[in-house]
Image 1: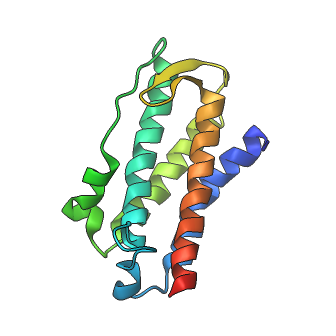
Image 2: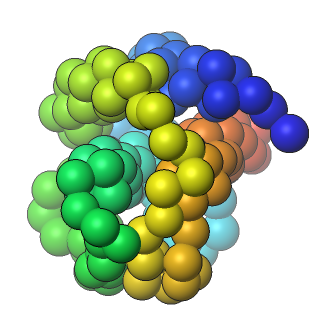
Length: 152
């Protein structure tokens, strides 16, 4: 298992890695899905911005409330909205750069990684587990985008 420092570094480095990975993609490439009916590369980028905004707020709620209970959202519905299906990923990359910079400041100052909260799909979790979830989320989406690019 990765250390806390390593997982925070994944969160720190993710926006730059994502931007470098997608920097030279054309509109056609950005709107290409791995399989028919799956999200495009652009939708994956927009999804990560949506999901990580949720993640940042979830950390803040868990840190400021006793046994915080998070709500969930419909990822597919978000991806189908105009801002979630646009080929233009610049705004989502901008969100990720700013968001992750703030998130890292927050994460580097967590004093109790065993603090618990209620996740809408996973039940009771700790902040340590939530950090792993989002670090893994970064890796999973980079891998998914790379897989689409390899098939092009």
